[in-house]
Image (cartoon, rainbow over all chains, first blue to last red; front, top):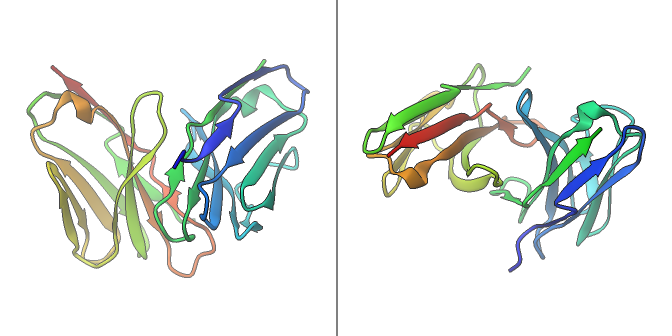
Length: 113
Length: 112
């Protein structure tokens, strides 16, 4: 199994630009999670999906952030417009069921100039 | 709100010394998971504890869940340089739609 796949691995963009992060969960996993990791705030859950349906998006910082999961094998996290304070590593994780262990992808390191 | 406190934030040990990190919650947890993140890497699941007072071992690692299910610890015996990384606990609260609440992590440095 390839594990959770994320793209791009690194993204450098300018303030105001739209950023789209992509995730392919492990096949057969029903739950998908988006996290953000920074030195200041640690690892924060942004949103999670169960069977492609968003269950809890209370961690999404503001309306500039949106996430979709159009099918069981693909999810996106979009930031529009991006700001320098959005610079962080964004992880996608999936689990077989929502209470099981989570498998993290390699992360996308986002830098907003 | 629901928060998992983890201490210490940093720990430097000499290779061969023991290491312990602690997690505490003000309210009862359903279960707690532990993850390890190597420098530049991503969190990797280590173990899940569910029962009150549960103790699990993985080679040199010992995990404990408190009797009140409000605290947990990870103890590493005789650290090795391969143990370097950040160790996170992540608690799940009963009746909460929220998933895991991660502690702030303990960054372990092992000096050869």
